[in-house]
Structure formats: structure tokens, C-alpha cells
Image 1: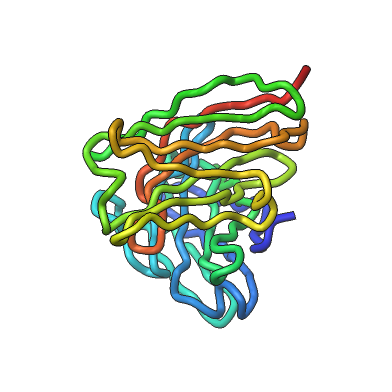
Image 2: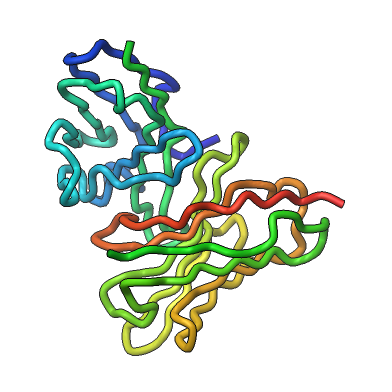
Length: 111
Length: 120
């Protein structure tokens, strides 16, 4: 069982927006601004989409945005495109004992 | 452009040692601005962080509690790579293993992944 809780699935139509949640505790998501999001297409390695809650690496479209409130972080994908269909994982720093924890992943369908 | 190239066997016998290597191009394992990490991914355990090494005037190592007694991550400065060794493996260690670069409190470059099965 993953340390962070994500919904197993989400869906939207092309052009719509969808938000994926990631719930942790005060020991991880709520305690640090070190939340990141990853996109993973089948058979591929994860790709960094968001780091430090809200920041986008160069090359990531601004359709992807991140936020956090309390112990829950969120990823919003706006203007859904068919290529956004993938698995999405959140990760958070969790302190000096077990440094990094992840969510179980959300499968996004673009219908 | 930073790239990570993984190598190592895809099949390991129970109670033996799993060994993988991650070769770095476009960056240095000795850089003071990044960390070098290992993960695994399986249906039962999801995406799991295993351990890391990094250099800040000396080498540092951090390991996940779940594997701490069995894992070693080592840098190899002569070949600009780093390695994962996981001892006494069982079928529960069957997973897709990834190396990655840690940067800005996230993981921005990933290896291609190596599927490792533990079976006799």
C-alpha cells in the first residue's frame, strides 16, 4: 500500500480540465513543499511534470499545474489532449528516515 | 542533455545479489548539485524509493528503511556511473528498477528501466 493516496482513475474529454489529488500527512505532503508529479506512459520511465509543488521544468506545457492545501497536493491538467492519457504519480519528501514516498498512481483517460 | 543508461541482469536467483549499474552522460556522479537515486516499481508495491548517493565534499548514502539491511548504492567516479546492489533477494524483489537524478527536490532524469525477476 502506497504512503500517499491518489484516486486510481480519472477522466476527461479533450479540451476539458481534470484535477488529480494526492493526500498524505503532516510528515510528508503537509510538512514540506517538496511535492513532485510524474507522468508515465506505458512501457516508459516516469517524466517529471511538477516539482516543489508548483514549478514546471522547462519543456513541460503550462497546461500542467500544481498546488497544495494542507496535507493534499493536486495536479491540474487543463485543455486535455489525447497524449495526456497516462499514469500520474505524486511524490513527496518525507523526512530524514524514509526520504521519499509516492502515491499509488492515477490512470488518466482522455475520452 | 543528461542521460542515464542502465545495465544488469534481468534474472536473479533467490538469496543471491541483484546488481545494476547506471551510466551517466552529460553530468558527473561527483557533481555537488545532484543526487543519484534508485527506485523500483511493481504492481504490489507501486513506485518505491530505494536509496541514493551524492557528493558534497565527501560521499553520502541514504537508504529506505524497507531495504536498509540489504542495499548498497555506490558511485564509480572512474566510469562516471553508480550502482545498486540488493542482497538476499526473494520473489518480492521482482520489479522494474529505475535509476534517476535527483535535482531541486525531485527526479528530473530517469534511466530506461530494467525488469528484474527473482526466480530459480
